[in-house]
Image 1: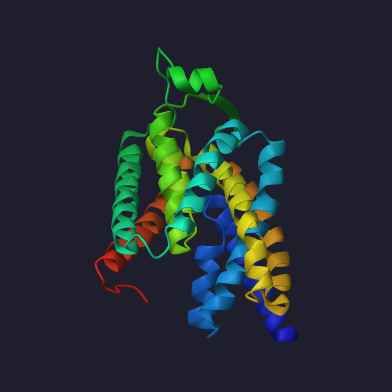
Image 2: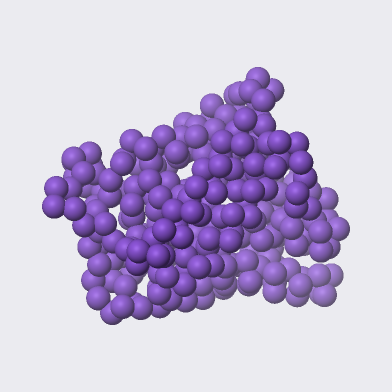
Length: 283
């Protein structure tokens, strides 16, 4: 038990750091380690993944709120779309063929990765237009943050608000129907469609993921999917890792975060595309 607890603590520490930096939660890291590395049932791995997302969000959001990196108005606005989509997705279980959603969102993630490569080549991180987006200005979604890597205040504008809302609604449907995490979709909606800088996109995603995961955690708890011996030490490691990760993210240049994020998006996107086609490319 002590050895298992220490392993979970270490896994949680790593997942918390990576999740806080990339804004994808620790679920994508936790699940493969528990199932492939430790032979744990997928049922309990998913339960642990939910706890991982909540712990990552809790540990990192405090730091991001204090340093004013995340965009609270964007988070609350997009969370409406995600929540409604998740409810509809859950109701559509057994009606809609999941392969079409896998294909659609897999292609969207691959497109997002390609768009990030374009941003890397251009070196353009912040959108500044002479005429701000009318909807974003009306909803007061434009923001600013202090970039600790560049040691300056960064003002940014938000655009394509309906497109971002639509992507988040679809991500909610996919999450409710397929039982997948949506951290990568949240970052994609803000970075690719709404043209937000990556640091506010990642930190805002962390907050939103915690809200979404908390809504479903009760279900996993009462159906016995959460094992305290696994979840407790892992959550402690994740909380510490998320605090460390939130510090690292703020001093990292956005370019390096993109360089790490691009292969993650490609991996998830291609995995979903091939799963939609009925091909298990990655184990």
